[in-house]
Image (cartoon, rainbow, N blue to C red):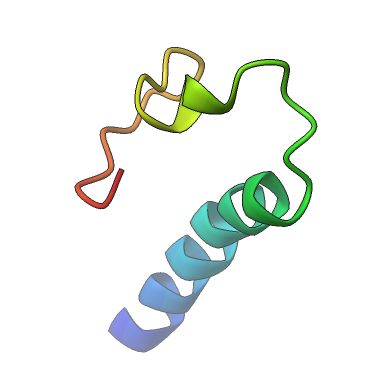
Length: 45
């Protein structure tokens, strides 16, 4: 059950990050340093 839960969290969190890295169509590239739209505070930003 823990593996399924971690995989579900993995699948729900990663696609926006992958899409943000593969399609950098944002007007300001500094959005990765100040993630105002994301409620998460990623340690690797």
